[in-house]
Amino acid sequence: MKLPTWITTAATALAAVLLPACDVVNLPEIKPGITTAAEVRSRMGNPGFEFSNPDGSVTWEYTRQPSGTTCYMITIGGDQIVQKLEQVLTEANFGRIRDGMSRDEIRRLLGAPASKVVFDNLGEEVWEWRVEGVPPTEETYFSVHFDLRSGGVGKTAKRVAMKG
Image 1: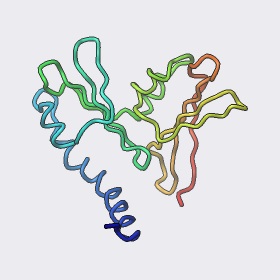
Image 2: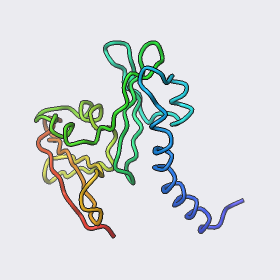
Image 3: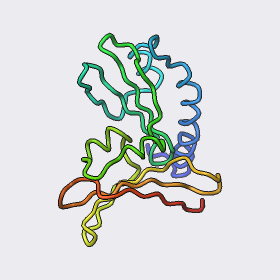
């Protein structure tokens, strides 16, 4: 049975509104040194990506892109206990980006982007994230430009657009 379009649209809109609200409830309950990996998965669902770390821990990515402005990285130790929870779309992390960094390094630092666009005429691929901005009447975006020849970061930029 096919649902009417308006029901599908309403359900999608409701999910977009409630997903960030779930973060408000769930994130304060995730406590480093106490919360288990199973509890994180129960509260947050399956991560969008899992990064293996050299020390044997794993970092789970929970991005809220493209509609949200956050990406949470939760590091789980070998003992299956949360070591760290951080929102990675921050000015501090944007400042860590250096020319020549790889796509994998940027993905690990900032999480999955909201969009990826290749500009063959410019010789670059641009990844973009929605980020927190001021004032609330504007939307702010952070982008990383990769050189298509070298594959590494060539530059970063921020842009602001009016909402609506």
